[in-house]
Length: 83
Image: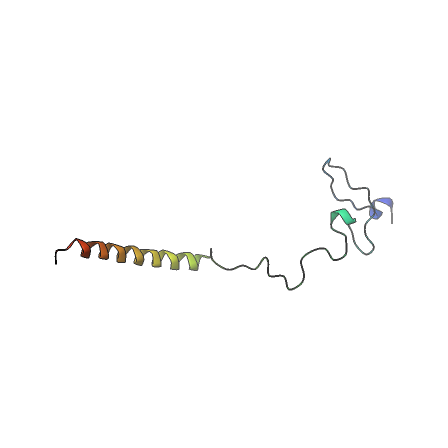
């Protein structure tokens, strides 16, 4: 193993590789993601996709909006009719 394999190697803001040594059993130093326990837990739901923007959902909302506009138009027409 040469010296480059013993370094973190992550790119610093200046563009140079990080000179720190990686955490034991990791490829990166503590500052660049090698710390134990970093990252989301295994059952993390924070990135769960809800599907609100899926094509199917968009099409369904378009249909519902069209029905709503038609209903509003019908109500407005009936209000204009004399009794």
